[in-house]
Length: 227
Length: 88
Image 1 (cartoon, rainbow over the protein chains, first blue to last red):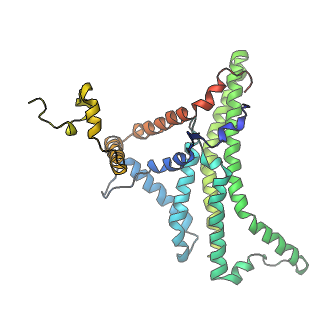
Image 2 (image 1 turned 90 degrees about the vertical axis):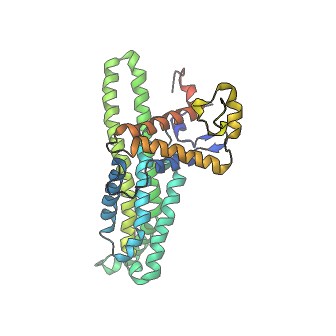
Image 3 (image 1 turned 135 degrees about the vertical axis):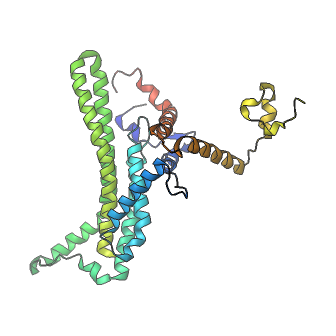
């Protein structure tokens, strides 16, 4: 059985039961629904404050029709944030490293923004394919380029998230392997590698949060163009 | 009377070892019963550690630590090969 560094990304299963379901549902346990008191417990207060912050950030550029998207965008943001951050704990499985899952999230949402735009304001949506002020000779080429860039958006959304998280986890695994291997032979170099590992972990925490934010932000941008 | 309280109503910590089998037989193992038991356990944990006036980090850290331990148990069969390998 050849073990490679990519084994941490294989979808885990116990006696044939896919454990990815548990990894996907677990973040919901960490978000209790606030009770009907005026002052809730600290966890609910933190959660409410954070969700307010995200929703305001996302909904300010959108007009009234866009506010219908508030629920799905905010819950997507919370889901991605929590799954990415939980994946940094030892031995846990990050479902967002699976390309299938990220594409399953990106494709339908992007398609929804596109169809909303094409249905409600078709000429404005198609008008986005040609930026203003382009020289007449460039128009055909630019339309082709803009169409390609439009069609590649869901792939980019999914692959961006997958690649960032996978690369981060791989780097952590590689550098920690180097640290433990060097501890017996060259302890000082091992300490340096440990410092690199510490910085890398801080970076990974930031990347986890940023990638979730970028995903949802881009979706809201696509929505603004089309709503 | 020693058996004044019904076996069904005694808590687990009060059940004698010999009575364990019959106590288990009185429990409700239907799907609805299992969901009820999970909800009761969740509410117990939530009201003891999180839904308090000055909850701290401990409440949520215990959940995360349990998740880490559970993930280790699930991936043990995969991870045990790493122990004595020379080249990873």
